[in-house]
Length: 339
Image (cartoon, rainbow, N blue to C red; front, side, top):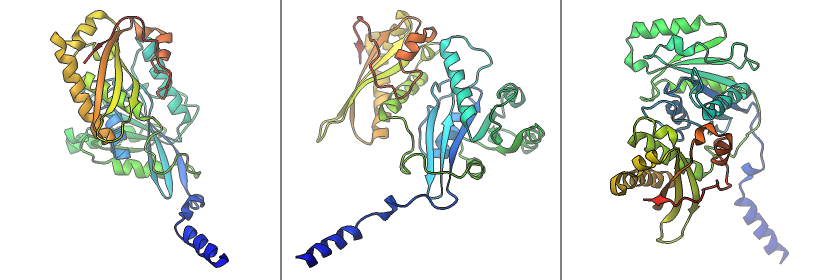
């Protein structure tokens, strides 16, 4: 009997993953790298390239990122936590803008490495001016990324690169094309060499700390930016009420609300006979299915919340201060219009 028990014990131990009990290897590096820049400079595209999957909204319109998006890149000997921040605007127009700027400043203050990205085709010198605080409390190593270099001539790239290399505090300059996926490997390697030695901060197979609901809402917001024009996309916020995974042949059920600021915007979002909302729902559903890797049924509704961008209570209620918020917002008495 004892011999049988010993054999069983050996059997269990032979199948056990002892890596779970071991610490990080000597010299393991870990830390935070913040990506900052003006609206539409290419921050989100760069984050997606560095992580190797799509985490941040990418559209041709500026100021689509509202939260500090956290992406994680891990290997056995390092873990780099990337922070994609909202675009730094030169002036603030409402409480939402103030909240986003505060998020950027906090990311810069806590970063071990700072990556400032400028659009090479849109006044890169003026874009960099005032981007960082004049006196940085945390003088993290600073690398400047000149994005969209594929649209410049070689002499122009050299001129811009030499300009930024002369700026005090800039440690290195990277010409890249985030959209084409060129140059980001050098950025990653430089950032890694400047991370401090430290332990793993998140499980190695994690690519973000945000829950699935957050990314579902971001996918819907991206489709709003791509489908609608002018002020409408900027006046909307998406809240995922529930996401029920269903076994077997049934599709996952996702209930989500789009909040807008005025009734006129609700009419635009819904469209004649609900066609615009149906088109939006279909486009969002297809990308959500790709993200989750399973079929879903998306129930998408629209509600008006007057002036939510300028109301601190609404910003908090709709999760703008905490992207991982789970408490339901106050939906109000008005009925939904759904797709």
